[in-house]
Length: 221
Picture: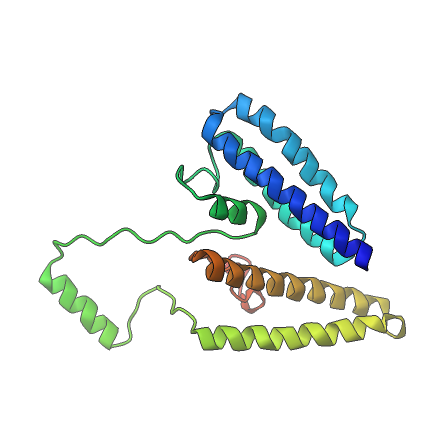
């Protein structure tokens, strides 16, 4: 395990150096084919780095964050598109976070026009008093979200204990439990990433999941 942790630290350092190199490309290399040629070696390295890790959790998370999301973000960045190219004055910290982590910054809505009719304002205020908010969903409270993550954390711990004795259960049941385990692990991991990004960089992020298991239709999902 100590050797695996050392490999993981080396992988993280390699990723950080590659992202800093890509950040400098945006300052000195124009977008297009030239920047793409400079980015291709980084993308190739991102495809190789998860192979240096033998752990399923570390290797799988690195492959998802870097080989999949990071590579596509850098390819879009080479042509001046994607989340890495939306703000030319982006700081190195935000560039690294957006490139490495599965986060999407929530943009502030445009300011409302000031010449709104008094009648419209009166109607809007009356609708709020009557509880008629149209199609705008109510934001979830922080307390409810925290409780939701705590419950899912307990479920994840129980699933890990059950899967440890998987030889005593039917294979079809184990397959279903593995699917549930992957979903809970991914949601828990993305929630932690979002908390770290908010705390360290002050970013306002879009939520990754909105309880898809409560969907009433495929379109709702």
